[in-house]
Amino acid sequence: MKTFLLDIFPKIERFSEKLDNLTLLTNQHWVSIDEILSNKTVYIFRSTNELLVSTNGKVEKAKWEYLGNKSLLIDKRSDSYLFKHGFFDENVLALKVDSSEEYAIFVNENKYEGELNSISKVHDFLSEKYLNPDFKTISRPTTALTNLVTVSRVTNEDKILKIISEGEKTIGAKVYIDDSAAPDGTYIYKNYRFKIVVKNGEIILLYFLEEVKTYIFEKRNPGEPSVGDKIFKQSGEAIQNGVYKYSFFKSFTVENGVIVK
Image (cartoon, rainbow, N blue to C red; front, side, top):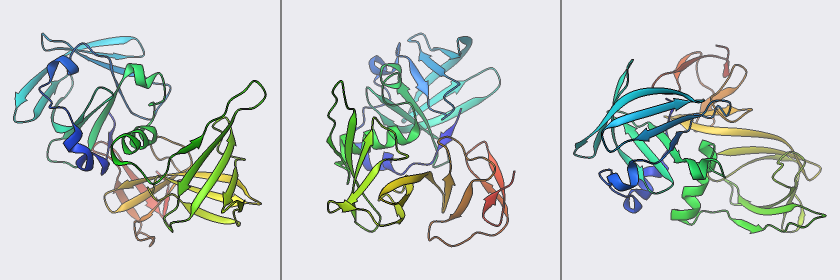
Protein backbone atom coordinates (compact mmCIF):
# COMPACT_ATOMS: atom_id res chain seq x y z
CA MET A 1 0.00 0.00 0.00
CA LYS A 2 1.65 3.20 -1.18
CA THR A 3 1.44 6.29 1.00
CA PHE A 4 1.85 9.95 0.04
CA LEU A 5 2.66 13.20 1.79
CA LEU A 6 0.13 15.74 0.52
CA ASP A 7 -0.74 19.07 2.11
CA ILE A 8 -4.09 19.47 0.35
CA PHE A 9 -6.14 17.30 2.71
CA PRO A 10 -6.00 19.58 5.78
CA LYS A 11 -7.03 22.45 3.49
CA ILE A 12 -10.19 20.70 2.29
CA GLU A 13 -11.07 18.74 5.42
CA ARG A 14 -14.12 20.94 6.02
CA PHE A 15 -15.65 19.57 2.81
CA SER A 16 -15.15 15.96 3.86
CA GLU A 17 -17.75 13.38 4.73
CA LYS A 18 -17.34 11.68 8.11
CA LEU A 19 -15.50 8.39 8.11
CA ASP A 20 -18.45 6.71 9.81
CA ASN A 21 -20.63 7.35 6.75
CA LEU A 22 -20.73 3.62 6.10
CA THR A 23 -23.26 3.93 3.30
CA LEU A 24 -20.69 5.83 1.28
CA LEU A 25 -17.72 3.71 2.39
CA THR A 26 -19.06 0.18 2.08
CA ASN A 27 -19.75 -1.87 -1.02
CA GLN A 28 -17.84 0.58 -3.21
CA HIS A 29 -14.78 -0.38 -5.21
CA TRP A 30 -11.92 1.78 -3.87
CA VAL A 31 -8.76 1.61 -6.00
CA SER A 32 -5.51 2.20 -4.16
CA ILE A 33 -3.34 4.86 -5.82
CA ASP A 34 0.22 3.58 -6.08
CA GLU A 35 1.35 5.18 -9.36
CA ILE A 36 2.17 1.75 -10.82
CA LEU A 37 -0.36 1.57 -13.62
CA SER A 38 0.41 -2.09 -14.33
CA ASN A 39 -0.98 -2.95 -10.88
CA LYS A 40 -4.52 -2.34 -9.78
CA THR A 41 -5.50 -3.04 -6.18
CA VAL A 42 -9.17 -2.68 -5.25
CA TYR A 43 -10.43 -2.48 -1.66
CA ILE A 44 -14.07 -3.43 -1.00
CA PHE A 45 -15.28 -2.64 2.53
CA ARG A 46 -18.24 -4.90 3.22
CA SER A 47 -20.87 -4.00 5.81
CA THR A 48 -20.00 -7.28 7.62
CA ASN A 49 -16.51 -5.86 8.34
CA GLU A 50 -14.99 -8.20 5.80
CA LEU A 51 -12.47 -6.50 3.51
CA LEU A 52 -11.77 -7.84 0.03
CA VAL A 53 -8.44 -6.79 -1.47
CA SER A 54 -8.14 -7.64 -5.16
CA THR A 55 -4.77 -7.12 -6.88
CA ASN A 56 -5.00 -7.69 -10.60
CA GLY A 57 -7.88 -10.08 -9.96
CA LYS A 58 -6.21 -12.06 -7.16
CA VAL A 59 -8.34 -11.67 -4.02
CA GLU A 60 -7.18 -11.61 -0.40
CA LYS A 61 -9.74 -11.63 2.40
CA ALA A 62 -9.05 -9.32 5.34
CA LYS A 63 -10.93 -7.43 8.06
CA TRP A 64 -11.70 -3.79 8.70
CA GLU A 65 -13.30 -1.99 11.63
CA TYR A 66 -14.35 1.59 12.34
CA LEU A 67 -13.10 2.23 15.88
CA GLY A 68 -14.72 5.58 16.50
CA ASN A 69 -12.72 8.77 17.15
CA LYS A 70 -12.15 9.07 13.38
CA SER A 71 -10.08 5.87 13.36
CA LEU A 72 -10.20 2.87 11.04
CA LEU A 73 -8.34 -0.43 11.42
CA ILE A 74 -7.35 -2.58 8.45
CA ASP A 75 -6.27 -6.06 9.50
CA LYS A 76 -4.61 -8.02 6.70
CA ARG A 77 -2.97 -11.42 6.90
CA SER A 78 0.55 -10.02 6.94
CA ASP A 79 0.07 -6.58 8.51
CA SER A 80 -2.38 -4.44 10.44
CA TYR A 81 -2.75 -0.71 9.89
CA LEU A 82 -4.36 1.99 12.01
CA PHE A 83 -5.58 4.97 10.02
CA LYS A 84 -7.08 8.32 10.94
CA HIS A 85 -9.61 10.27 8.93
CA GLY A 86 -7.96 12.32 6.21
CA PHE A 87 -10.55 13.16 3.58
CA PHE A 88 -13.59 11.40 2.22
CA ASP A 89 -16.12 12.08 -0.53
CA GLU A 90 -17.84 10.05 -3.23
CA ASN A 91 -14.68 10.11 -5.37
CA VAL A 92 -11.66 10.05 -3.06
CA LEU A 93 -10.85 8.35 0.24
CA ALA A 94 -7.67 9.50 2.03
CA LEU A 95 -6.67 7.62 5.17
CA LYS A 96 -3.91 9.15 7.28
CA VAL A 97 -1.37 6.71 8.71
CA ASP A 98 -1.57 6.98 12.51
CA SER A 99 1.27 9.06 14.00
CA SER A 100 2.38 10.10 10.52
CA GLU A 101 1.69 12.85 7.99
CA GLU A 102 1.31 10.37 5.14
CA TYR A 103 -1.88 9.20 3.48
CA ALA A 104 -3.06 6.06 1.75
CA ILE A 105 -5.25 7.31 -1.08
CA PHE A 106 -8.10 5.48 -2.79
CA VAL A 107 -10.28 6.49 -5.70
CA ASN A 108 -13.77 5.28 -6.51
CA GLU A 109 -13.34 2.86 -9.41
CA ASN A 110 -15.79 4.80 -11.56
CA LYS A 111 -13.41 7.76 -11.40
CA TYR A 112 -10.23 5.69 -11.54
CA GLU A 113 -11.29 4.20 -14.85
CA GLY A 114 -11.82 7.77 -16.05
CA GLU A 115 -9.48 10.60 -15.13
CA LEU A 116 -8.28 9.92 -11.58
CA ASN A 117 -5.60 7.26 -12.00
CA SER A 118 -2.53 9.04 -10.58
CA ILE A 119 -1.67 11.06 -7.49
CA SER A 120 -1.08 14.21 -9.51
CA LYS A 121 -4.51 13.93 -11.13
CA VAL A 122 -6.14 13.38 -7.74
CA HIS A 123 -4.39 16.46 -6.37
CA ASP A 124 -5.45 18.64 -9.30
CA PHE A 125 -9.02 17.30 -9.23
CA LEU A 126 -9.45 18.12 -5.55
CA SER A 127 -7.81 21.53 -5.97
CA GLU A 128 -10.12 22.41 -8.84
CA LYS A 129 -13.21 21.11 -7.07
CA TYR A 130 -12.67 22.57 -3.61
CA LEU A 131 -10.02 25.29 -3.71
CA ASN A 132 -10.57 27.12 -7.02
CA PRO A 133 -6.91 26.61 -8.04
CA ASP A 134 -4.54 28.96 -9.79
CA PHE A 135 -4.94 27.16 -13.08
CA LYS A 136 -7.89 25.92 -15.09
CA THR A 137 -8.81 24.57 -18.47
CA ILE A 138 -9.50 27.39 -20.93
CA SER A 139 -10.93 25.41 -23.81
CA ARG A 140 -11.09 21.88 -25.04
CA PRO A 141 -12.23 21.86 -28.70
CA THR A 142 -12.42 18.46 -30.32
CA THR A 143 -13.43 17.76 -33.92
CA ALA A 144 -12.82 15.00 -36.38
CA LEU A 145 -9.82 16.96 -37.70
CA THR A 146 -8.29 18.34 -34.53
CA ASN A 147 -7.94 17.51 -30.88
CA LEU A 148 -6.25 20.60 -29.49
CA VAL A 149 -6.40 21.25 -25.77
CA THR A 150 -5.61 24.68 -24.35
CA VAL A 151 -4.91 25.14 -20.65
CA SER A 152 -3.41 27.85 -18.48
CA ARG A 153 -0.85 27.19 -15.79
CA VAL A 154 0.51 29.65 -13.23
CA THR A 155 4.21 29.37 -12.40
CA ASN A 156 5.88 29.86 -9.04
CA GLU A 157 6.92 33.29 -10.37
CA ASP A 158 3.27 34.16 -11.13
CA LYS A 159 3.70 33.97 -14.89
CA ILE A 160 0.65 32.68 -16.75
CA LEU A 161 1.51 30.06 -19.33
CA LYS A 162 -0.93 29.22 -22.11
CA ILE A 163 -0.20 25.69 -23.25
CA ILE A 164 -1.68 24.25 -26.44
CA SER A 165 -1.24 20.54 -26.99
CA GLU A 166 -2.57 17.85 -29.29
CA GLY A 167 -4.75 15.66 -27.14
CA GLU A 168 -3.03 15.70 -23.76
CA LYS A 169 0.53 15.25 -25.00
CA THR A 170 2.82 17.46 -22.95
CA ILE A 171 6.06 17.01 -24.87
CA GLY A 172 5.90 19.16 -28.00
CA ALA A 173 3.09 21.35 -26.66
CA LYS A 174 3.27 25.04 -27.59
CA VAL A 175 3.79 27.47 -24.71
CA TYR A 176 2.84 31.16 -24.76
CA ILE A 177 3.15 34.08 -22.35
CA ASP A 178 0.97 37.09 -23.21
CA ASP A 179 0.26 35.51 -26.62
CA SER A 180 3.98 35.37 -27.48
CA ALA A 181 6.11 32.22 -27.54
CA ALA A 182 7.50 31.58 -24.07
CA PRO A 183 11.24 32.30 -23.76
CA ASP A 184 13.58 29.34 -23.49
CA GLY A 185 13.96 28.24 -19.90
CA THR A 186 12.66 26.20 -16.99
CA TYR A 187 9.21 26.79 -15.49
CA ILE A 188 7.84 25.36 -12.24
CA TYR A 189 4.08 25.28 -11.72
CA LYS A 190 2.82 27.18 -8.70
CA ASN A 191 1.42 24.03 -7.15
CA TYR A 192 4.95 22.57 -7.28
CA ARG A 193 3.73 19.41 -9.00
CA PHE A 194 5.50 19.81 -12.34
CA LYS A 195 8.56 21.39 -13.93
CA ILE A 196 8.84 21.93 -17.68
CA VAL A 197 11.73 22.91 -19.90
CA VAL A 198 10.81 25.09 -22.88
CA LYS A 199 12.87 25.59 -26.03
CA ASN A 200 11.77 27.42 -29.16
CA GLY A 201 8.32 27.86 -27.65
CA GLU A 202 7.75 24.13 -27.08
CA ILE A 203 7.96 21.83 -24.08
CA ILE A 204 10.94 19.51 -24.53
CA LEU A 205 11.17 18.03 -21.02
CA LEU A 206 8.68 17.34 -18.24
CA TYR A 207 9.54 16.50 -14.63
CA PHE A 208 7.18 15.37 -11.89
CA LEU A 209 7.82 17.08 -8.56
CA GLU A 210 6.81 15.53 -5.25
CA GLU A 211 7.26 17.17 -1.87
CA VAL A 212 8.23 14.80 0.93
CA LYS A 213 8.86 16.41 4.32
CA THR A 214 11.37 19.21 3.61
CA TYR A 215 12.59 17.75 0.31
CA ILE A 216 11.45 17.67 -3.29
CA PHE A 217 11.88 14.62 -5.48
CA GLU A 218 12.32 15.50 -9.15
CA LYS A 219 11.14 12.50 -11.16
CA ARG A 220 11.36 11.75 -14.84
CA ASN A 221 8.23 9.61 -14.69
CA PRO A 222 5.07 9.63 -12.56
CA GLY A 223 5.00 7.21 -9.66
CA GLU A 224 7.73 6.43 -7.20
CA PRO A 225 11.21 7.90 -7.71
CA SER A 226 13.77 5.69 -9.39
CA VAL A 227 17.54 5.52 -9.77
CA GLY A 228 18.74 8.62 -11.61
CA ASP A 229 16.02 10.92 -10.30
CA LYS A 230 17.04 13.95 -8.24
CA ILE A 231 16.25 15.17 -4.75
CA PHE A 232 16.88 18.60 -3.24
CA LYS A 233 15.69 20.84 -0.40
CA GLN A 234 12.49 22.81 -0.84
CA SER A 235 14.64 25.93 -0.78
CA GLY A 236 16.45 24.62 -3.86
CA GLU A 237 19.67 23.89 -1.97
CA ALA A 238 21.58 20.66 -2.47
CA ILE A 239 21.27 17.91 0.13
CA GLN A 240 23.98 15.87 1.77
CA ASN A 241 24.73 12.32 0.69
CA GLY A 242 22.76 9.78 2.67
CA VAL A 243 19.58 7.76 2.95
CA TYR A 244 16.30 9.69 2.68
CA LYS A 245 12.85 8.41 3.59
CA TYR A 246 10.33 8.62 0.77
CA SER A 247 7.30 6.98 2.34
CA PHE A 248 6.28 4.96 5.36
CA PHE A 249 7.71 1.88 3.64
CA LYS A 250 10.55 3.08 1.39
CA SER A 251 13.85 5.00 1.51
CA PHE A 252 16.44 5.92 -1.15
CA THR A 253 20.21 6.31 -1.11
CA VAL A 254 21.30 9.66 -2.56
CA GLU A 255 24.73 10.78 -3.78
CA ASN A 256 25.37 14.28 -5.13
CA GLY A 257 21.63 14.93 -5.21
CA VAL A 258 20.89 11.88 -7.37
CA ILE A 259 19.21 8.63 -6.31
CA VAL A 260 21.69 5.77 -6.69
CA LYS A 261 19.77 3.03 -4.87
